[in-house]
Length: 264
Image (cartoon, rainbow, N blue to C red):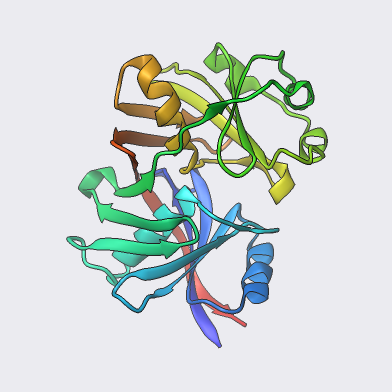
């Protein structure tokens, strides 16, 4: 068996920046897909196949676990489907996933717009051990979905220069991952980073699903429905996110850096 495979840099128009995702056009059994993801070693590997109703079945795996929602690998998957002509530029892609139905539309020069659910964070008691692992003083903390937490700090410089202790962070049993966010600089509304060593990702380069949370938090505080956001990882990436009711519309560009054949 062989399947088409692509490596796509998502949320960037420049190769070797943004967040890498492998996109496999086809599915296998769960154990096989997990082995492929471990082989690829990207933060997520996406597996896409046509569904029964004209949509596409989409699953995402980190090198260690399957996840319920992934923004950048969804963007990468939509990019591959549009770029290879499997979907026309005027069509809406419907993805059937463990996180519900997601949609993607071609947005011209702006890239692709993903339609995701907004995720409202809830205040949570501060966890001193989490802040210690991040190397931060205790500050505002909120809980998001799936044992992910969000820490709010005062300055973008703090976010940009953060150097977590990944061994400590990965040892926290009740913390699947953490977002650290602050008001923006350099023309951006907000600056953020994402760390998830417990699922095999010390730092995620650009985390699309995080912005479903950040628009819910920062929108009311900044008095806006749209954010121009920067994720300050080493690779870096830009995300435009707009809130429409209970939906977060994420727009970004992508670049294919590898196309080939996966032999199993």
